[in-house]
Length: 328
Image 1 (spheres, rainbow, N blue to C red):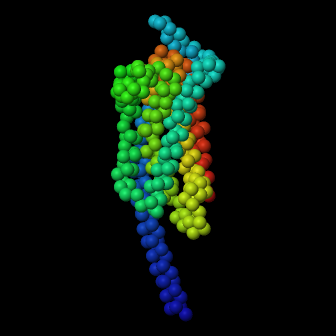
Image 2 (tube, rainbow, N blue to C red):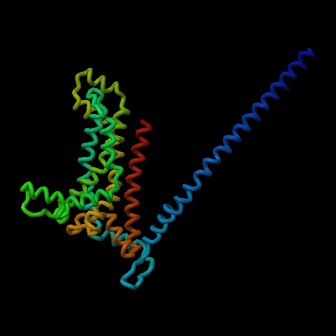
Image 3 (cartoon, one colour):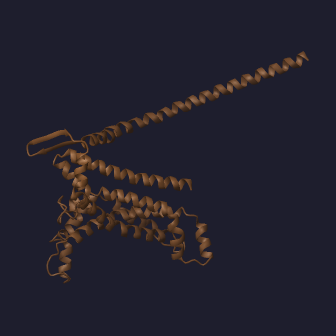
């Protein structure tokens, strides 16, 4: 009995020793993992420094300046004088705010509506296995290429093409369509249409790729079952594809709207920063740029904060939509 007790205690001691060794090994591994994790934080330091210097500090400074009257009148500096929400009240009461916001939305809609229609059609064609389209990689590359070209280059190209003495007017006059040069940039409808057309050309490729990715993620058995039940391609598109694409469509809509609110370079270059004709192509960011150019930092800061709030709300909607998709 004593011998068996001794053996049992010896086994217990051996097992406890082995457990201690295992615990030590696990602790060493965990310490190594922790040490490796530290490197991840070290690599985040450059990003945090850049973010603080070029994003967070300017944001706080902008919000701070928005509460002050601070501008230059000729050679005389006015302020900075604390006026609270005075700059915000001036902007919201200004007729220019609603005029320029309307201009921005109109030009965004002109570009976005054909963009989403074209992207849906191309996405449906490229992802339909029954069509067996050849050269898909080539066409996808060509479609996306305009997205890689700088907006300023596009604006300069369109400015040259549609100027009073440009190639477009020359071709139309040679064909007998017009008898004298048509002033595209002095006509409200034409100027807005040119801005919308440039935004459409630059961004429909990116939208097509996004929608194609969404369509390829849909379970193919749904399409097969619908075909077996005798559904046509149009019925499948409107009753299966579009409803399942709703989260991506919301994402595309809101991100495009955010880009539309930030519209600046195309109309700025096309109209030579005037927003002509009659300021009907002046956008919100062009108006902001005029405040900054005239050293009116108070009004410029207030307008920036308002645009920041609008963009933040739209981004929150995108986040909520994406979160609800993951839950479902």
